[in-house]
Structure formats: structure tokens, C-alpha cells
Amino acid sequence: MGGTITPITMPKFGLAMTEGKLASWNLPIGKEVKAGDELADIETSKITNGYESPAAGILRRQVAPEGEMLPVGALIGILADADVSDAEIDAFIQNFNDNFSSGETEDKNGDASARRTVDVGDLRISVQESGNDTTGPAVLLIHGFGGDVSNWMLTQSALASSHHVIAFDLPGHGESTKQVGDGTPAGFAKTVEALIKALDLPEVHVVGHSLGSAIALELTKSSPDLVKSLTLIAPAGLGQDINMNFINGFIEADRRKTLEPVLQYLVHDKSLISRQMVEGIIRYKRLDGVVNGLKTIASASFPDGKQAVSLRPVLETFNKPVQILWGEQDEILSVKDADGLPPAIGVTRYPDTGHMPQLEQAAAVNASISAFIG
Image: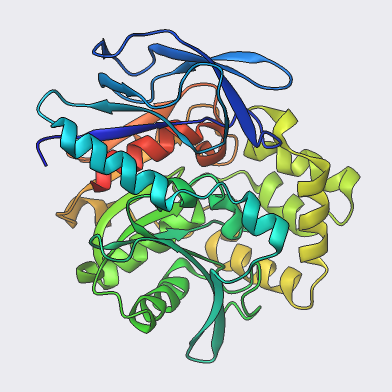
């Protein structure tokens, strides 16, 4: 292929948004654009928002016509370099649309066919797979403290248009076994390594979020041959400070009134924390072993209110691609922890974004990962 192709997909302006109408294109085909240029107007049931380009390139295709209603994540346009042929773009669009799923069908039918349990030693790990397993290394998504596969609900389907994508629940989380071992990132990395081998994957692009990034770095330290590239989103392991009001509040809060303000630390736009999300986490925390597992993780990973291990040296010796994506208004881990890293590591900071840019800046994050892993 001659150059980079960046898919432009229907954005998600709020956690409740499932579809939007492409009200108008603001730039013509063939226009060279910069990241942040306003490409189109997107209309939802509540508002009309300008859609800023997540990357630089030439607007080669307006896949969606004006006035069309499309699900979140659907392909609406293509940015590509000038040396990418029309045939390559046609093939990309065909492959994207063949593999795209809005998730609505699975939700409505209760289809759990993409979800399965993998035995890893004496642990049972819940794995959710999607996408094409014939297009190079798979993409492995590792969530953070208190999360689960739903943290990647806007990431997995977008990446699955071109890659085999695997999300899973860490031990102690979601539908996986509730034993967390010693609760350290290094301990979880051993489980992740065993999972990769159980799935018979020679190497993977690793995308980690928060504590999941620290686990990714420990995996890179212990088994660099398994890691094709690293995308670290709001990563733990690069500094000492962490918002213990969030960690302790997440463990201790047992009702909506007390948990909701804790979850609001996760995002810049506090309206994104829905009642449904809060109640889902309360139900999860009532499962046997969950709270004790979270306490073990917190004690091991954040003793005395600080992050236990600095993993910056891993980035100084790892000689494969690494990028870092971070919200400038992160209230849990400071974006300043990305300062002073080796110059080869690309750092993208998103304005008006908190600790979960994969939710608040889903289109931009998906475009960054897609362009990064090729």
C-alpha cells in the first residue's frame, strides 16, 4: 500500500448516543486537512455538533451522503495520502463495511457468540473477540482498575474492521474469575502472557488503559517478543501520584449516591456518567470476591497512596513503536507524567478530555490507533 488511510467514522458525542445524521459536509473531496479542521456537521436528537478531523490528510472520499442516519462507528469518510490509489481505498472501504458491526444486533439478540471463556492455569478469563484474524498481528485491549471489556465498546468494533481484536476481563473484573493473585501489574502481566499463548498468538499490538498500561509495560519487560507495538492510554506506571479519592471511593461506595461522584473523576464531561453505568458497577461489586480483589490490587499497586512501581525504564529500552494518548483534564493520573519520555515516543494530548479518552474522544483515539498499527 502506498500510504496511510484513516477512516472517518460516525462519532459518539455522549454515552447514550447510538446513531447520528451526517447533516452536511463542510469540506470538499480533495481538500487537504489538518487534525482539528471541521469536516462535517453531525446531528443527534439533542444537538448538532461540528466534527473535527482526528488526523491530517486529504479528504479522499465522502462515503456517507448528507442527510443519512448512521450508527456510531459507521464509516462516513476517508482521509488518505496522495499516493494511496483509488483501488486501495475501495478495498479498504469494502473491508471496513464487511466487518463493521454497530453492536446493536448483538445487544438486541443477546448474542454471546463472540464471548468465550479461556482457561489460563487455574483462572478462567472471559474473552471477547472480533474482526479479521487473517490480517497480521492481533490487537489486545487491556482495561484498567475496576474496568471490563465494556471500556472498549467504542474501540473494538472500529479496529475490528481491519484487525483481529481481543478484549478480555482481567482477573477480579467483569466475568472473569475473581482471584487476583498478588494484585501487582507484574502478576497480571504473567496472566496476560499466558492468555496470549493460550490463544496461540505469536505477537500482539497491545493497547492498555490506566492500570492496563502498567500491565502492558510489565508484559513488555518480561516478554518483549510478544509485543508488536504499544499504545498506552492515560497510563499508570510513569509517575508516582494517583487520585486515591477515586481508588478508595470506587472500593468503598456501595450505592448510587456515593458511587456516582467517584465515577465522575473518570471523565471531563460529567454528564457521561449515566445512572445505568453506576448501577451496573454496583451490581458487579456485589459479586463474591470483587471488593476483596479490588482491595488487594489497590494495596499492591498503590501502597501509601502512591504508585508502587515506575516502569519508565521499559520505554527507554523497548525498540518497537510506542505511542501515548492522554486527556489533558485527567483527574486520576496526571498527563504531566508523559513529559520527559524518549523523543521517539509520540504523545497525543486531548483537550477537554479526562481519564478515558477512548470514550470521550473515541473517533480520534480509534484513528490514532488505526494509523499507528497500520
